Length: 453
Image (cartoon, rainbow, N blue to C red):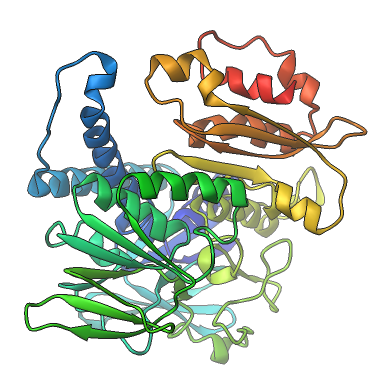
């Protein structure tokens, strides 16, 4: 089975390694760095910078822990070197894994010559033609920039031009209050920047639980972040002093030293020869797929951002694994389809936010009967010991059966703690299964059992 993968991000890597273990002859074509955008520009660099900011914030809270006041200074050069070191170390580790599995990696640009032929354009314009029994398209996406703006990488930035930024902005105006936008607010606020956030709706994180969004808004306001709610950015101007101003549709003007756009992404489906191969693309540039991640052509798959599903690295990785199994015919045996509604997600702000499964607001909107239990971290011994009792644990369950349907966590280490609820949701566990688990004391995880009570 000749399996050719265009794009070496989370989906491509997982499909390649799992496919090779199952016996496929796998070739991966990647134009940048193994690991893709998640490694090079998005997940890993952003979280590395956020981790630095978290240490700065923690140091500023030293007095609460019985220490003398600490005022750490950010070394932008050292932080940038650290981010690059992490990125390259992960890329080298992944490359070693691929090589150990016998996967062929081509550094170049891939595109479809026909439905069973792939061209890899490598350095100097040389072209290699590959025959394929199965093809995976996992080319990711790129940041969206509005038509009325131009990201110059200096004063007007996309998310990928801020890992790291050329300088730490004196006053950063963030356009976009989704997951990426609020993470940038947190990051640069912790670095000492003044931050203004343009919120097109009436709450940050419009797709999240209102109570969760309110907790984050409260923390932003307490730390001096200016929120411009109900304002949609429609224009951009530059001042004589080099500053940048954003005009909103309600005539408010938000000015700062830099502007950062975090308004979503565009799938990288252009230039792949999809028309020539007969692959259907929708109006948004995505490749629609079925529950096996198969496109309109049975042997051509799409995964990750380009598939139009949840834009999470974890989801892309699982898509890659499921695709490899389908390519090798294992879907006819023990094979569970990927359930996107049970994917856990996290937002690395301060406090952290994480959720999984059915949300309280979603259930009420659909008229579904649920049981909601909530416990604040202010009642948790470990949270008090750590000096950070912000946030809460909320668990949504079926009132008749006790089966865990979902949950939200706001607080320290939420991204780690949500895994317990995610396993409960996926395995159809009951709240009693969590309550009766013998957990460590003192630990933040005890709040999960308390919330399940």
